[in-house]
Image 1 (spheres, rainbow, N blue to C red):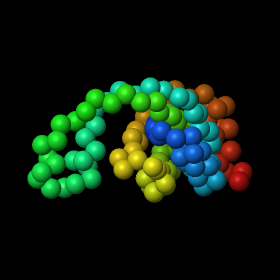
Image 2: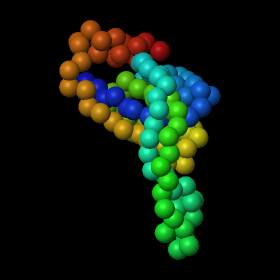
Image 3: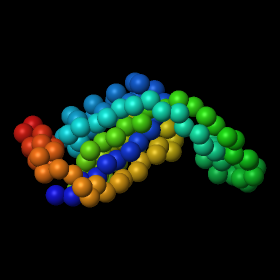
Length: 120
């Protein structure tokens, strides 16, 4: 069974806990790691909110903020379901959702993940 790591960030503990709870309760992830990180990126909020010509030339600003990084362990067949739930419950207008294939996963850990999902 193909495993992925879904990486996702948010800024509030409340939103992180909501996303974790939904993923676990819907049996889409057997395990989620949560850690605090510092993110540096360019952002132009107005250009995302407005689809008109006066905001198209807005310059992105460099942003540095503390975020919460979530690592969801997910089977490939559940990735799109989890992505849809994250999009529906996320506090960001454009949440980061990145899927990374895991090519080296111990058989024991993979079995635990599968059994954890199946036994609910």
